[in-house]
Structures are given as structure tokens and as C-alpha cells.
Image 1: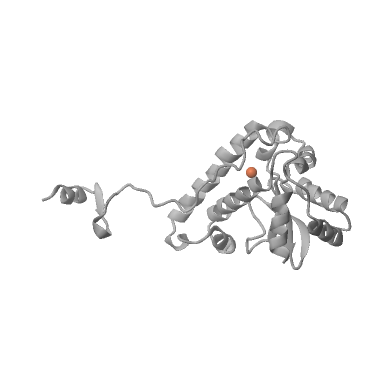
Image 2 (image 1 turned 135 degrees about the horizontal axis):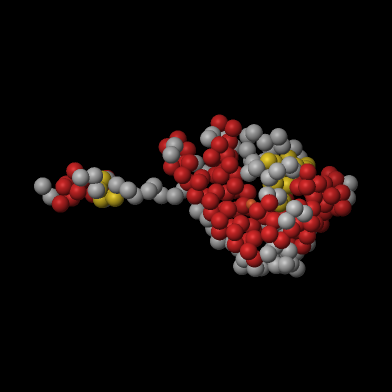
Length: 233
Ligand SMILES: [Fe+2]
């Protein structure tokens, strides 16, 4: 008996195609990965403090990715699907996929929607014109977006979405998002703000409204303009 055959018999290795020897305890390739932040953790100071960014990305977002991978690994039918495909089927999938898949998608988008103060550019003329058309004025849009975040009971998100040929402000509970088949309003995300307490509590405690008002200073309008242009074309 060869050493490899002996190890196989003892369950220490598995035989794989093409002569590969794989450890029996090797975990499957992880389907989803946590990308690094596109800026330093202190880059959004003083609007969002460094500690909040560290915990938010390195702990909360990382946990969504880990738990999503675990949920997908447990069900072969879910493997090989894109995140968007999973979300589009959220109503028929385990809660762990809905919650952690949404968490991964929402946060991956969220990081790119922010930039250091003074580096996010300005809303494009096209976006401003469409905001005026759909909300009446820029100020009315800002008020609607802040209210969507403020009135979301518990945890969730405020969104600007392109839906049914127009811009709409909505909010979703928990880690739901407008890509999910179960969303009340489905559409393409243009802007999103995280109103979970973990996004603001260290600096603002219970004052979610202060966080929402200050957050405009770190919006990455260049990114928002691009999302709008792609969705509304
Ligand atoms: Fe979050």
C-alpha cells in the first residue's frame, strides 16, 4: 500500500481528478471577497471617524462576506452565481443569503459612494436637472433623502434609485436593497446611505439626523454621476 493510498484510507486526503491530492479538510474556494477600502480609514475625517470606518469595514462588512460564503458553501444550488443573481432571487433563498448577500452588496457600493471632504466633485448638470424634474428642487431631494434615513425604524438604508424611468428616494430595512425581487421599489441604485447604528454611533450616538446632514460632505458625486448616467441612458 502506497503512502498516498494509506492516507486516503485513513481519511487524511481525498483523491481528486488529474492526480491532485487535496486535504480532506480544505474549504471550498471562497465565492466572495472583501475588497479593501478605496481610501484610508481616516480619509473621511472629521465627518466619519477612523474607528468607525475600521470597525465598519474590517468587522461588519467582513462578517457579511464570511457568512455569505458559509451560506453559499452549504448549498450547492447557490454556488457559481453572481451576487446580483442571488439578490434577484432573495425571496426564495435562505435568510442568511438575503441578509449577508445584501450586506456585502450594500457595503461594497457604499464605500465607493464616499470620498474625502472636497474630493467628491459636484453633481453633474444632467443629475441636477433630473433631480429638479423628479423632486421639484435640489433641497427637496436632500430633505426627502434625509427623511428616508431618519424615518427608517431600526436598521436599514436610504436610497436614491432609478426606477420606472425616474429618480425615486426610498428606504429598505436591514440589508435589503432595490436589486432584490422582494423590494417594494426595484431599480438601479444611484446613491445609498447606511443608517445602521454601527455607521455613526461612536461619533453621533443617538443623533442619526446629525449623521445624515453631515454625510453630504463626503459624497463622491463623480461616482454618483456615473451611476446615474449608466442607469438613465
Ligand atoms: Fe453598515
